[in-house]
Image (cartoon, rainbow, N blue to C red; front, side):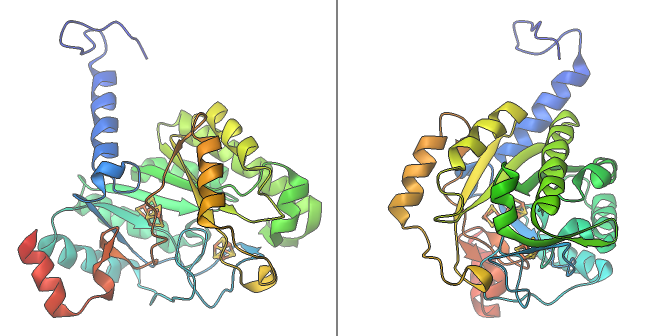
Length: 307
Ligand code: CLF
Ligand code: SF4
């Protein structure tokens, strides 16, 4: 990208690159997760169209939504792509402050064809809305061209470690190339796919966010190494989430608020830290702190009047 700017700050020789810069600025400014100032003005809608998952995290109980991006213990009703489109039509008509369409589960979006069908339908009818997705990254290098083609512009990858020895403690298995793989073999593939996928996604112009689950005794001494690596890869923002101790990690003690804050402070010089995440459901919609999917019709109408 040329940096020869005229007095208006625009790029005389590259109008294309100016357009990209202004698109990027608008996308961030209207994204409630990427910009803390946007969280009170703009909302997101999550479409629960992706039930299958391609890995087993040791802190996940698969009866519920993906806890890499959601509050655990809640289950969303899975929608078909067509039902998701109809839901978006209804919700946007009533709540035009919603600017982001996110797919974050209940499983891993890249393990479900319905994710791509849904983005295709929504992108055609609502070209001005930001398409956002969250993934564990295992299928990212293979599926990235489809995300780019469909116009997905903000992407979250859950990176809980960059050392295969630690990764092997976090995933009990992965499903890759039709095979169930475990231990260090699975961890090395997971690591390679996540790093290659993030690098390629940044190069393709997507704005990357990283979710990292802080798991005491497993990766707590390692979060700073992840932050340094993410800076090197060009990640925009990092969300350190507290472990919810369930599944195979039920015996671990979650981090305290102070422990998490201290790690975020340590990581801040490398990657901007997100501190306003509410671990939304895979079917949440509205402002981040005001999930309309969990409100009565009466309360929803009041919010509609207010906005
Ligand atoms: Fe959804 Fe995630 Fe996109 Fe946001 S959520 S897919 S980046 S539109 Fe946001 Fe919710 Fe936290 Fe996620 S508050 S759980 S970080
Ligand atoms: Fe559960 Fe999400 Fe991990 Fe899949 S990626 S096992 S849904 S936490």
